[in-house]
Length: 186
Image (tube, rainbow, N blue to C red):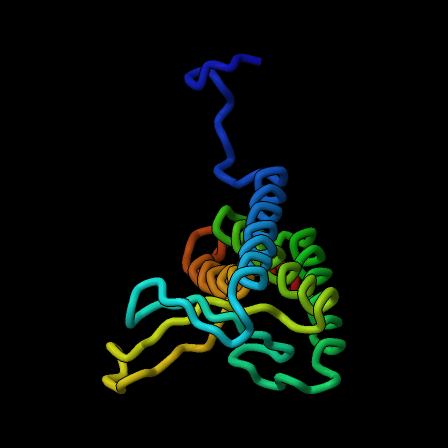
Protein backbone atom coordinates (compact mmCIF):
# COMPACT_ATOMS: atom_id res chain seq x y z
CA UNK A 1 0.00 0.00 0.00
CA UNK A 2 1.32 3.44 -0.92
CA UNK A 3 1.98 6.07 1.73
CA UNK A 4 1.63 8.82 -0.89
CA UNK A 5 -1.54 10.81 0.00
CA UNK A 6 -2.29 11.36 -3.68
CA UNK A 7 -2.56 7.63 -4.36
CA UNK A 8 -3.98 6.50 -1.01
CA UNK A 9 -7.48 5.06 -0.84
CA UNK A 10 -10.11 7.70 -0.09
CA UNK A 11 -11.08 8.04 3.57
CA UNK A 12 -14.66 7.46 4.66
CA UNK A 13 -14.48 10.71 6.63
CA UNK A 14 -15.39 8.77 9.77
CA UNK A 15 -13.05 8.78 12.74
CA UNK A 16 -11.56 5.34 13.30
CA UNK A 17 -12.13 3.31 16.43
CA UNK A 18 -8.49 3.78 17.56
CA UNK A 19 -8.86 7.56 17.15
CA UNK A 20 -12.10 7.61 19.16
CA UNK A 21 -10.62 5.35 21.86
CA UNK A 22 -7.58 7.67 22.01
CA UNK A 23 -9.79 10.76 22.26
CA UNK A 24 -11.79 9.12 25.05
CA UNK A 25 -8.60 8.17 26.90
CA UNK A 26 -6.94 11.60 26.55
CA UNK A 27 -10.05 13.44 27.77
CA UNK A 28 -10.50 10.99 30.66
CA UNK A 29 -6.86 11.50 31.73
CA UNK A 30 -7.19 15.30 31.37
CA UNK A 31 -10.27 15.18 33.60
CA UNK A 32 -8.60 13.06 36.26
CA UNK A 33 -5.32 15.03 36.26
CA UNK A 34 -7.12 18.39 36.45
CA UNK A 35 -9.23 17.17 39.39
CA UNK A 36 -6.12 15.83 41.14
CA UNK A 37 -4.34 19.17 40.68
CA UNK A 38 -7.30 21.01 42.19
CA UNK A 39 -7.52 18.62 45.16
CA UNK A 40 -3.75 18.97 45.77
CA UNK A 41 -3.49 22.74 45.35
CA UNK A 42 -6.78 24.38 46.32
CA UNK A 43 -8.44 23.91 49.70
CA UNK A 44 -12.03 22.70 49.63
CA UNK A 45 -14.29 25.74 49.23
CA UNK A 46 -11.50 28.10 48.19
CA UNK A 47 -11.65 30.11 44.99
CA UNK A 48 -8.67 31.20 42.88
CA UNK A 49 -9.22 33.90 40.26
CA UNK A 50 -8.20 32.97 36.71
CA UNK A 51 -9.70 35.98 34.91
CA UNK A 52 -10.65 38.47 37.60
CA UNK A 53 -14.39 39.02 37.78
CA UNK A 54 -15.17 36.24 35.31
CA UNK A 55 -13.56 32.81 35.82
CA UNK A 56 -12.25 30.99 38.85
CA UNK A 57 -10.94 27.64 40.00
CA UNK A 58 -13.17 26.64 42.89
CA UNK A 59 -12.60 23.36 44.75
CA UNK A 60 -16.06 21.88 45.26
CA UNK A 61 -17.42 18.41 45.93
CA UNK A 62 -20.69 17.19 44.44
CA UNK A 63 -22.29 13.85 45.25
CA UNK A 64 -25.42 14.81 43.33
CA UNK A 65 -26.04 15.50 39.66
CA UNK A 66 -26.06 18.63 37.52
CA UNK A 67 -26.24 21.92 39.40
CA UNK A 68 -25.80 20.09 42.73
CA UNK A 69 -29.26 18.52 42.69
CA UNK A 70 -29.49 15.64 45.22
CA UNK A 71 -26.09 16.64 46.64
CA UNK A 72 -25.47 14.89 49.95
CA UNK A 73 -28.18 12.26 49.49
CA UNK A 74 -26.99 8.86 50.76
CA UNK A 75 -28.39 7.00 47.74
CA UNK A 76 -27.04 9.40 45.08
CA UNK A 77 -23.69 7.74 44.30
CA UNK A 78 -25.19 4.28 43.97
CA UNK A 79 -28.05 5.41 41.72
CA UNK A 80 -25.88 7.66 39.56
CA UNK A 81 -23.19 4.97 39.30
CA UNK A 82 -25.74 2.44 38.03
CA UNK A 83 -27.18 5.01 35.61
CA UNK A 84 -23.66 5.84 34.35
CA UNK A 85 -22.77 2.21 33.68
CA UNK A 86 -26.15 1.71 32.00
CA UNK A 87 -25.46 4.74 29.81
CA UNK A 88 -22.05 3.39 28.75
CA UNK A 89 -23.56 0.00 27.90
CA UNK A 90 -26.32 1.81 25.99
CA UNK A 91 -23.80 3.85 24.01
CA UNK A 92 -21.88 0.71 23.00
CA UNK A 93 -25.14 -1.10 22.11
CA UNK A 94 -26.41 1.85 20.06
CA UNK A 95 -23.03 2.16 18.38
CA UNK A 96 -23.22 -1.50 17.30
CA UNK A 97 -26.68 -0.78 15.88
CA UNK A 98 -25.34 2.14 13.81
CA UNK A 99 -26.75 4.97 15.93
CA UNK A 100 -23.54 6.98 15.50
CA UNK A 101 -23.05 6.85 11.73
CA UNK A 102 -20.92 9.90 11.08
CA UNK A 103 -17.91 11.74 12.44
CA UNK A 104 -19.89 14.21 14.53
CA UNK A 105 -22.05 11.61 16.28
CA UNK A 106 -19.08 9.25 16.78
CA UNK A 107 -17.05 12.04 18.33
CA UNK A 108 -20.03 12.80 20.58
CA UNK A 109 -20.13 9.16 21.71
CA UNK A 110 -16.41 9.31 22.59
CA UNK A 111 -16.95 12.53 24.57
CA UNK A 112 -19.91 11.00 26.40
CA UNK A 113 -17.93 7.94 27.41
CA UNK A 114 -14.95 9.99 28.64
CA UNK A 115 -17.22 12.32 30.63
CA UNK A 116 -19.23 9.51 32.18
CA UNK A 117 -16.09 7.54 33.09
CA UNK A 118 -14.44 10.65 34.57
CA UNK A 119 -17.29 11.37 36.97
CA UNK A 120 -17.95 7.71 37.80
CA UNK A 121 -14.28 7.29 38.74
CA UNK A 122 -14.67 10.12 41.26
CA UNK A 123 -17.84 8.61 42.69
CA UNK A 124 -16.24 5.19 43.10
CA UNK A 125 -12.92 6.41 44.54
CA UNK A 126 -14.03 9.44 46.56
CA UNK A 127 -17.80 9.27 47.05
CA UNK A 128 -18.25 12.59 45.22
CA UNK A 129 -17.28 14.38 42.04
CA UNK A 130 -14.61 17.08 42.20
CA UNK A 131 -15.79 20.26 40.47
CA UNK A 132 -13.57 23.29 39.95
CA UNK A 133 -14.53 25.44 36.95
CA UNK A 134 -16.61 28.42 38.02
CA UNK A 135 -17.80 31.40 36.00
CA UNK A 136 -19.32 34.65 37.19
CA UNK A 137 -22.05 35.60 34.71
CA UNK A 138 -22.71 39.09 36.09
CA UNK A 139 -22.21 40.55 32.60
CA UNK A 140 -25.20 38.49 31.44
CA UNK A 141 -27.56 38.98 34.36
CA UNK A 142 -26.54 42.50 35.41
CA UNK A 143 -26.49 41.23 39.02
CA UNK A 144 -23.45 42.02 41.12
CA UNK A 145 -22.37 38.36 41.26
CA UNK A 146 -24.07 35.47 39.53
CA UNK A 147 -22.06 32.26 39.52
CA UNK A 148 -22.86 29.47 37.13
CA UNK A 149 -22.70 26.03 38.77
CA UNK A 150 -19.19 24.71 39.32
CA UNK A 151 -18.23 21.94 36.88
CA UNK A 152 -15.26 19.98 35.51
CA UNK A 153 -13.71 18.60 32.31
CA UNK A 154 -15.97 15.50 32.37
CA UNK A 155 -19.09 17.67 32.63
CA UNK A 156 -17.79 19.77 29.73
CA UNK A 157 -17.32 16.63 27.61
CA UNK A 158 -20.90 15.55 28.32
CA UNK A 159 -22.33 18.98 27.45
CA UNK A 160 -20.31 19.28 24.23
CA UNK A 161 -21.39 15.72 23.31
CA UNK A 162 -25.04 16.64 23.78
CA UNK A 163 -24.58 19.62 21.47
CA UNK A 164 -22.80 17.49 18.87
CA UNK A 165 -25.57 14.88 18.97
CA UNK A 166 -28.17 17.58 18.38
CA UNK A 167 -26.06 19.03 15.56
CA UNK A 168 -25.64 15.59 13.97
CA UNK A 169 -29.41 15.22 13.57
CA UNK A 170 -29.32 18.14 11.12
CA UNK A 171 -26.40 16.76 9.13
CA UNK A 172 -26.71 14.19 6.32
CA UNK A 173 -25.38 11.49 8.69
CA UNK A 174 -28.28 12.05 11.08
CA UNK A 175 -30.95 12.19 8.40
CA UNK A 176 -29.65 8.95 6.86
CA UNK A 177 -29.63 7.25 10.27
CA UNK A 178 -33.20 8.38 10.87
CA UNK A 179 -34.29 6.97 7.52
CA UNK A 180 -32.61 3.63 8.31
CA UNK A 181 -34.27 3.49 11.74
CA UNK A 182 -37.63 4.28 10.17
CA UNK A 183 -37.15 1.54 7.57
CA UNK A 184 -36.10 -0.96 10.27
CA UNK A 185 -39.20 -0.14 12.29
CA UNK A 186 -41.48 -0.83 9.32
